[in-house]
Each structure stands twice: as structure tokens, then as C-alpha cells.
Image (cartoon, rainbow, N blue to C red):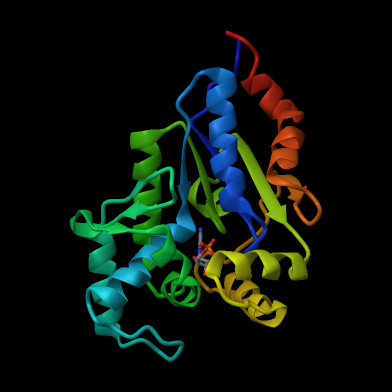
Amino acid sequence: MPTLINEITVDGTAGSGTSSFTEALAAKLNELQNSRWSYLSSGSIYRALAWYMIEKCGCKLTDEDMPSLLTETLVKIAEAAIINQFTDGCVAMINDHLVTSEELALMGDQAKIVAALPGIREVVRRIQRSYVKAYGPCIIEGRDIGTVVFPNAPIKIWMDAALETRAGRRSQKEGRIVTPEELAERDAADYDREDCPMRQPDDAIVLDSTFTTVDELIELILLEDAFQDLLVPA
Ligand code: DC
């Protein structure tokens, strides 16, 4: 009998390729199992919140201490947000406003600020869990998914790659040069965040994507016992 599971978590450093991998893995499992795996990019939620604050509320998101009123507003916006991940990477936000992939791509620095604000992660956690409940089985990707959001997930994956490789990928995604130094700063923000810092889950399958394409990573992961069990014919 195939194993029945509701969530797979994919965590990893910025630019390690978690988003493309997650989307490709969902598509592959659907092809092989004739099932309906969905996926969720958690970074898109933080990016969409940042975009909404700037474009719709006219707020400035800066690295300096954010006024508590602004933080409260953001938490309220997040509480009312309806998240719906579409296959092209778009995320439906509050009031059904669609935030495009291009808009999301520009929000890297601002999302980092949103992700560290007090109170916001608790709300985003609720969004992530209710999304998986509504659209599961789901592959959910981020920084703290296997450690904090779904600590009991039956399959966890951790991805990393060399800093230079990741900086190159981020530059492509953001349409501007993201230097290795800038990316190292983002890593530090993710590792040092007080609330839910980025950590490799102890029980994760580890993938290094420095010299590997997404297709090769999918081939590799499907060889793992956990996936062999998942793919046993019914
Ligand atoms: O993966 P990404 O670059 O799209 O993430 C955008 C930001 O969101 C990044 O600063 C890290 C943050 N993030 C987070 O704090 N926790 C997650 N689970 C996912 C992303």
C-alpha cells in the first residue's frame, strides 16, 4: 500500500532553488500518482504582504524599528488575507487582489523586514496550516516549515547551495545584481531572526543544488525510501 501523507516540507537558504523544486516536485508526483498535490511558497506570502503594505497602504518598510502601529496594521492585513497560490507563482491576497510574480520578485529586501516583525509569523503560520488543510496534500516551502510550522511532517527536505551560485540565481529572479555579500546578509537575517530562525530540520533529506538542475534533483529525491513508499502502486 502507498503511504498516505498530507504534507511534505521543503526548507532551505535563499536562492538554493526551493521554489522551483517544490513546484516541479508537485507536478512530478501528480504525474506519477495521478493525484492532486498542490504547493505553497511561504516566501511569496511575506513578499505579497510587503507589496500590499507599500503599494496599497502607502507605507515605508525600512530596516529601522518599525512603528508599532504599522506592525499592528500589517498583522491585521495578514489576518484578513486570502492566500491562493497559482501555478504561475501569483498569490491572491486581500480583497482578491492578485500580486503578480514580477511584483513578488521585487520584494526580496522588504519581505525580509516583514518576516522579522513581531506577531506576523504567528498569523502566517495560521495561513500556512489552513492552506494545507484546504488544499492538501501539499508541498510547502520556506525557512521554518519543517521545524516550526509542520514539525511532524512525514517527509522533510533541506536544500542548500554555494553562496555564489545562489547569488547568481537570485540576480536572475530579481532582475538586478544580487551580490554574494547581500545574500550573506539575507542568510544572517534568516538565521538570526528571534522568532522562528531558519534551521535545517534534524530529520530532513539533504539536497545540495550547487551543480544540479531541478530535474536532476527530482530524480534524486524520488530514489529516497520515503518517496519509494509514497509511490508504491495502490
Ligand atoms: O524564499 P523567499 O526569498 O521568497 O523569501 C522571502 C522572505 O521571506 C525572506 O526574507 C525569508 C522570508 N521567509 C521566512 O521568513 N520564512 C519562511 N518560511 C519563508 C520565507
